[in-house]
Amino acid sequence: MTKIINPRGLRKHFINCFIIICLSLFFSADLRGAVIPVTPVDNIQTVINGANSGDTIQFGAGTYTQEFEIVSKNLNLVGAGIGNTIIFSPATVNLLNSFTYTGPSGPTTYVPIIMVENATVNISALTVDGDNQGSPPGPDRRFTGIGYHNAGGIISTVHVTNIQDNNYPIGYQEGYGILVANDTGTNTVTVQGNTIDNFQKTGILTIGPGLTFTVSGNTVTGNTPFSPANANGIELFDGATGLIHNNTVTNMIGSTTSSVGILAFDAVGLTISDNTVNNNDEGIYCFDVGDNLTISGNTCNTNNDAGITVANPDILTIVTTTITDNIVTDNVNSGIYLMSNLNDIYQMANNQFINGAAGLIVQGNTITGPVVTMNADSFTGTTGYYIQEITAPNDIWPSTSNVSFDGLVSGHITFAEFNQILTKIFDKHNDATLGLVLDYIIPLPPILININPPFGPPTGGGTLLINGANFISSNTLVFFGAVPATNVVVHSDNTVSVTIPPGTGTVDVRVVTPFGTTPIVIAGQYTYITTPTAPLPPSNFRGTLKKNKFLNKTEFGLTATWDPSPTVDVVSYVIFKNGNAVERISAGSPLIFVACLNSKSSVSSYTIVATDSSGQNSIPIPLIIR
Image 1 (cartoon, rainbow, N blue to C red):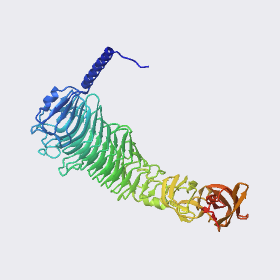
Image 2: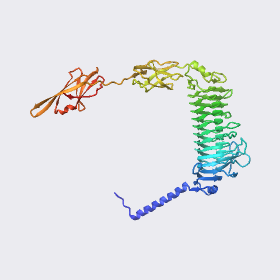
Image 3: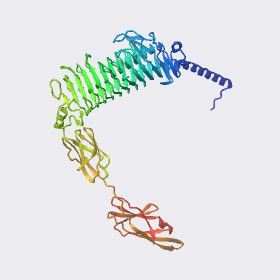
């Protein structure tokens, strides 16, 4: 059925739709806010003062030699790209464009080029250049590129540079690239994908209780050879909490004291993951951070002190720290340094200690100290001690954990290998004062339960999986009969994979460690299967035709013979007509085939194959008439 709308109703319908669409556009535009384009000749502070919350200020390309503040107004600042839109510090920084942070560490005044206070502001796609101007003279005033105070938002794809003052002496607390400070209420800030360099004090700083942050994907480069005291790449403290992920921090090197790639202290619930922190005085340094700190997946190479340090000397309750999957290479003093005055818990797994003077250093006092568990951590090429204890009374790890020392796996080593490891552990083991670091146990001989697959071609080359127990050792081998397998990979104490060597027949697969050889079991037998060879065909498949006429009907009598196949296990011959089997003749019978044909030409449709005892057929041979 078709519904008919009269013209007047149709016009009314269109008018109503038009009104709805117009109202929708009006309200949606109001919610989105206006886009306000600006150029370098505009006074940005005047534009901000006249803007409404929700508006976007679109900066055109060019250099804006201005500073400005956004207070209690939610805005978006969008540039034309890094290096295209440049917010350049005036020669005289306006002290009025500042705020004082009064958090747990005490009042500090920051003087930003772009200041955001009590608002949610997103800033993207521009450069902030401090021109090395520094703050106006006065006590504890700190020059800053972008400063957020009790504010939230996203700072992304921004380049902040030259935030320093070369007129002040080395060690002056001056020059912060991006600063987020919170001393009232709660706020959330994301700092992602930015580049910060040529700063005097800190590249990215997040501070204050009530602040939750994500700092990810940023590149922070220290200002070497300009060497301020305590210059840090990414820094957080005073109760801030959040995620520091996938950043690259390099060249934080001081002249008189240690500078740090990523520094955290007096913060809570932090995750520091997947960062690259290379060529600094200290790599990652966490001081009195508190419970539930996670340090995971970071690469910390060629730092002048430790790759990763966690020190909790002043925390009065036992805290737990998780340290996993980090790679610490060629750090001058140690790969990882752990220190506490209580029995704080450090859970370590899958960390790689490569080269460097020392691997893991653990420090407590004579009564309490870190309680460290390790599993699947590895030490390679350490020139000094693998593990060094300093007045640490607790066990470092359970003796059965799989910790690797230059290929020697703890708990799965011979007594000679055990003593070899002890030469690079301080202080050895079973010390009443320093605690148990490594204990020797007698490993069990390996057990083979089954293999998969149990058969394959004589050429070998495939992968075989072996299931069983007690496979981990410092020298695990696998044999197929007397032939060693290659590419032996011990995945766990229960699983080994190998590349199958060439062979023939059925052989016993056996796993060999320094502690024994697996017994021969039926489930461990491997059979090399040779692909059956097709039999040779018969020869001289030939036939004769005899024409017969009966009344008005003519027929042809076919008699075919052949010479037998030379293959010894041929059991029969199969005659095919047009691809269909029409008769099977035993190899022990007279080799004769007789058929009646309607036409002489149909002889060409016959073929014969030889069939062996495994059911393999030879190639077909056509019938030829003599």
